[in-house]
Amino acid sequence: MLTTKNRSETLRETIEEMIAVGELRPGQHLDETDLAIQFGVSRTPIREALIQLASMGIVVTRPRRGTVVAEIGPQQLVEMFEVMAEFEAMCGRLAARRMSSEEHTGLLAAHQACMEARDAHDPDTYFYKNEAFHDAIYEGSHNAFLAAQARSLHRRLRPYRRLQLRVRDRLNVSYQEHDSVVQAIIAGDGELTADRLRQHITIQGQRFADLIASLPQLTAKPEPIYKYN
Image (cartoon, helix red, strand yellow):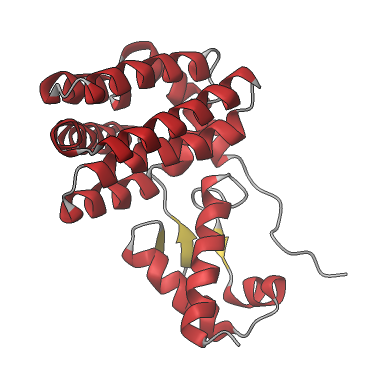
């Protein structure tokens, strides 16, 4: 039997995933009662899940408005991607120095999975395989604190990173960038790995324009998450 803590953690993961895939959109109000009905639980684990998400910055609790999915403005979005790029660069630099041959094998497997999703023209599958690819680099840094910080910011940016993959030809470009990162890591070149990951994550120029143009898809008024019969 699941404990209340386990239920709240499972709900937190589910709600976080709904936000990442756009089922719950930036600025959308999250009603505890509706969510409890939707998931068939009491309001207590829902409340605990929302508290966890608020501590991660994924949702925000506001006076008289309740809990809403966090909204990120264009300027803050650029700033967050800048920090994410540096986190990735640091992880990559350390991974190039510290990854074992077994970890290289795991990274290559994650890279292969991304290629298969790219060839299938499947941005949704690529999104998840891409996360596994980056997580292999975080793990390969062998710096638990840095990896935790990178994963935390990665989670906050998930909806926006997912959105980028829907831009024309982004899957192919992303895979090519991954390939250059893998080559640098296996060669043990920390500085080259850091530089390539920094460029891979930073949004600028046309990529920034494409992302900003796509934001209305993410913030469009959603359908209610629960409809009474």
